[in-house]
Amino acid sequence: MNNTQNAYHRGLAVEQKVKAYLIAQGLVFKDENFRAKCGEIDLVMKDQDTWVFVEVKYRARPTHGSAADMLTSSKRDKLTKTMYVYMAKHYLNPSIIDHRIDLFAVDGNRARWHKHV
Image (cartoon, rainbow, N blue to C red):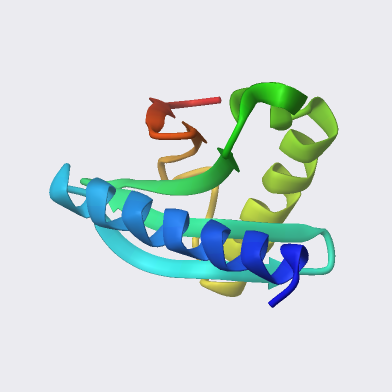
């Protein structure tokens, strides 16, 4: 397995750990790895009546910045567009359905959940 494949599999493993953590915190799992032309959403959860679109960022080492730094404004814009595509596809009207984007940043073994990014 090459480095790209290893990174991909590590990323999937981190996403699964984040999913398990969020479920343990009381969120309900709805979907994962939703893809649209404008981007991808790692996890879709519900926090009571609020739909939560979770971006998981992982950095094994801080040599290229922190995981949280990876959520640039252009990436945030893509996430927002993808969230609206998901909502339209699932007949969720964003003007009446509570929703938010969260970032789950994992740096090595340290994780931080940023709500409402």
